[in-house]
Amino acid sequence: MNNLKDKNILLCVTGSIAAYKACDLLRVLRKEGANVQVAMTQSALQFVGETSFSALSNYDVITQIFPSKEGETGLEHVNLAIELDAVIVAPATANILGKAANGVADDTVSTLLSICEQPTIFAPAMNFRMWQNKSTIDAVDALRKHGKIVINPEEGQLASLHEGEGRFPNTHTIINSLREVFDQHLPLKNKNILITAGPTREHIDPVRFISNRSSGKMGYSLAVQAKYLGANVTLISGPVHIDPVPDVNMINVESTLDMQRELNIYINREHNIDYIFMVAAVADYIIPNPQENKIKRKDSTLNIKFSKAPDLIQELSSKTDAKLIGFALETEDGEKNAKEKMSNKNLDYIVLNYANEPNAGFETNTNRVIIFSKKGSKKEFKLDRKDRIAAKLLDFIINNK
Image 1 (cartoon, rainbow, N blue to C red):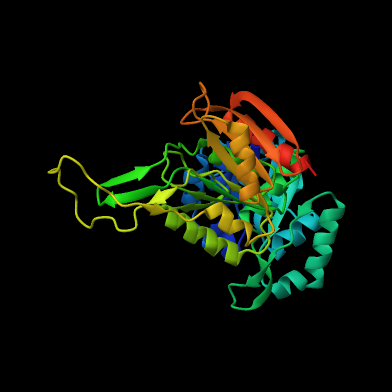
Image 2 (image 1 turned 90 degrees about the vertical axis):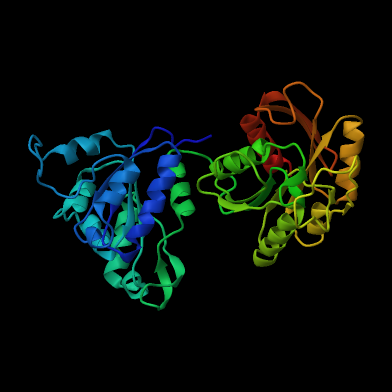
């Protein structure tokens, strides 16, 4: 469930070098369907111009306490404060933390914060010594005691080239905090999920390829629903006609070997993957030596040599401790084939659906699936929209201990 849709958010940007990162946060909020009004301090304007935020938010940016346009009363910030659902201060400097903690209202943002009683999230970004300064520590403590949410900054290299705690929090972390403000349960918070989706293409020559029928809708639906549940999602996608999923790490590939390479890179880099969903319709056979030039139509037959493709799922099962979920698309003997695949490939779960059922399987917005676990449990989800099926699958896996 996306609980950010149609929410009214005030995004306050203050004078940190990380101010440009607020543009990405604003972009994700808008993609999630939120209405966002931006307010900026004068020091923030030294780092990023208001035009960028105005274009991304589709609203004029609030930069002054007093009216600058004919007809304004100077009280727009008061009316705005009443209509909001939540406030995000990102980046939050040591200066604004101190002001907000002590009731100082001497600029646009601090004035708005002194009026707003809505849930407020601070996403700090500053030099590590500023974050460790006793005054900042006291300000953060005071804000938290007053019910404000102050996210700890991340550790790493800072703009000053020092190493330490002070980096702007990850956009996904801020979005998760906002979801929690609106009482969304996040059972996958801080969990890392890897999903493959779509088909692969195996080139015959520069203009022709063979592929599997797959729209990618099921894999993309799982990525969206996992994100809504708080997960850090990486989606490795073959060629599809679906918009990228905001707030998800998107990796685009074409061939089976491309997907194999990206999976290995990710597995080797990340040692704490919690769930892997292998939804992609990967080729069983590949063309090891595609023609360099277009093949001309001159013979009555054309022979193409195929070789067996690598078994990506079986490779993964020996490289990770993550829960491994496979998908089986069948036309006959579905349950028997799915269970055999689960056993042979050492899967924790397998999801069965049928290619020859009406309104299910290929290139549809709906699906009917049956999920099996290696522990022997089984659950059928009747024909429904793929995003709802995805949510049900995740719920089953999370709660099937």
